[in-house]
Length: 253
Image (cartoon, rainbow, N blue to C red):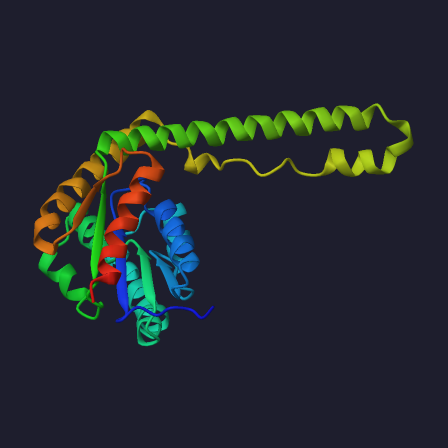
């Protein structure tokens, strides 16, 4: 069967503070819409091939100034708009965005930059057809971050234990001396970098920043007409709500 194009191209955005579940929901929406035979393109924050490596290095190195971050994220958005978003919309597709310009508005304001100046940076942006805001509290974001960190540590410990057991077995096998030597001298499996593990002080800083972003999102809800969905529901419940709203929109021609 042929792929269906909507009556008019649509940019659909999912927003929310960190760990609100945007990425999971965008992927589920993509798979669902493709199954409905719609032609879909996805785009995500910080994925421009020109800028993503620079941003990745900036996130793991010494902190940059807020203005520098702002300009880098703006460059990322401009590049994705020209390379991904506008071409897909011109083809009549549905574009799903995992975060959009509202992320910049919230983050830059939280870092103390002038809101009017930041908004002007994104004057090139395409107007979305729908913006969904997955609402969770800053406290929930911290809880999810801590849980994720613990899961990563548990995985690291399991991998280290598995490696140690394998090395011990190799040592006991004389007929596999060459393989044992390679095993013993090989590096340990990839572990969670220490820089990604948050101390209690870092978690508190994360909480403070999420509170600032949360406040900005609360103000933007009415100003930009966000559709608010409670992110504390199950993944399936959030997805069902999104699907109903999007299908109503697609059929409202």
